Image 1 (tube, rainbow, N blue to C red):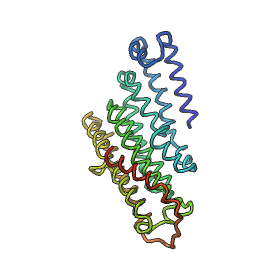
Image 2: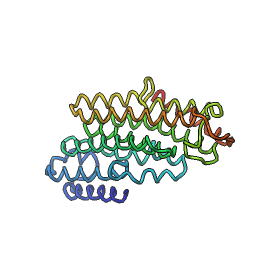
Image 3: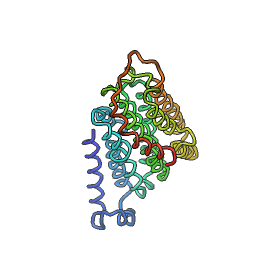
Image 4: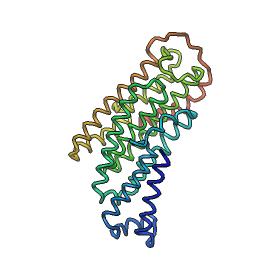
Length: 294
């Protein structure tokens, strides 16, 4: 899936070079000379660059690699989902804002891809039992929010959600890692339960992250999500707004489902926890501050 995205991105760069290469490919030169490119070619360039973003940021139809990537170590998952690869597509679209600002057909396509991806991922996450796959589809869904924002010209709101998402998603993944480690590498939430009293600190940290991703004030996710929803409504794209609003409700459902099953629901067996999970408590505390105040 990523090779398909890479092919689209490299093709877009090649076409951009053929159209404007003599004036330089740095962002300053590109922005100054973008008017030299015919509109039809500019639309194709914008589309091909976005194909790269679809691959890297796991948007439909190039998303199916994401849950399989969860087989890697949890700290790597936290880094990739919160700060590096998956958010690169959103940053790229925002950085090329001078191209997307004049390719209205493509930006509307970007917004709809984001809306459909966000809703689809939320629906899939509702039926997952692997704790890391729930969070993986959650990332895909939140990236859909970011693409809805940048697709409709709200680049600052999209990047703002990148920033807030980095804290609460890293907190969720590291919290999930602590649970997995404590339970001898168990990832099925149906085999967990009643961990609130045994892991009270992890429960509080996961609760903070869940409230943030659900958009509950005064946590950071509320401010970035609310800004995006307000912009979607103000832009007049009511179908996208309704899809985003529905996704927000589903996000609260699957995240609180995870929290209640893991920490509150009764367990079918007595868990003997490994003590190593306590080693990441300081990291969780730092991330929780970001989830609160980012």
